[in-house]
Image (cartoon, rainbow, N blue to C red; front, side, top):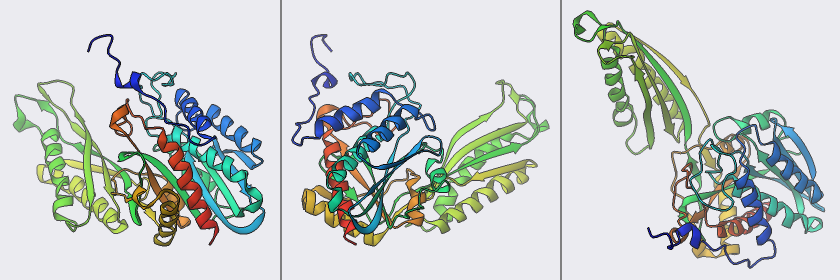
Length: 401
């Protein structure tokens, strides 16, 4: 590319600021993006969140699950309590974007949109606080640390998130790179999968690579297990039920001409249904523990359950969809295609009926096309204002109940 030809990043023009708070929300998102903090390290981030909530007159509790923040906006009239959640942690990803507001910390990046979630939730709090006296109910803002696999939601729940007052409904949004900017996607029932992990150890008998008959080769056995695990999907569950078993890590040995004494596997299991989840755990265990016996080896299996599936309540989702259609127009709302990704908002939705919806951030014109967790992940910042309007509409609809 000639040096005088601007890249897509250099051509980028911020969205038109049609609403008086849009300048602030963009600046806020970019500030969070420039200063990413990993799970349970969100000290600066949580400080900004707490300061802004206090300035709005909210009751603020800090230090929940180390760095989590809870803000309580009590309306002037009695009514239900609505929980609004935003996650705060960044990822251990080295950013490859050239934005002026790119990460200032090498190896850390907001590559999943949590910077946008925080900016959106803080703006929702700002706008709702302006009409506090007219609100019939309470909004509880949950700024959560450590969503990226470290269980921040679980710890916040254990430390009283859902108490005093207990939410009647729970809402959350996620900017989404597969959905076009200007669209909001939602769906009743499961929208994200459970995320479980397993490790396997195959113990054989090592020896010289040229004399395999004197060994029990764990590499060959591990290879058989990798293939056999796929039959849990093709032969153990209903083909109309989605599920995934992936072996993502295989390692054994230290030399090309030595058969090692053991081999190791690590993988993940994803599904939407608790019954299928239990079935897959059992079948994977049987394969790892029983198949090696046919070769005279031993198989050890460890299975760890992670986040459960994220399931939207049908009634709440219907309310949220109605509210967003009224706010943004019928053409702006589409049905979400469930993903095998996972999300610990699922733990809240197990206890509180709610809706987790997705705000489109994709725009090829500005190169906002990369998937979540990619070093060039970005969103069209028009998604911020859309997210604010959608969430406020959803909150107000729930308050009517």
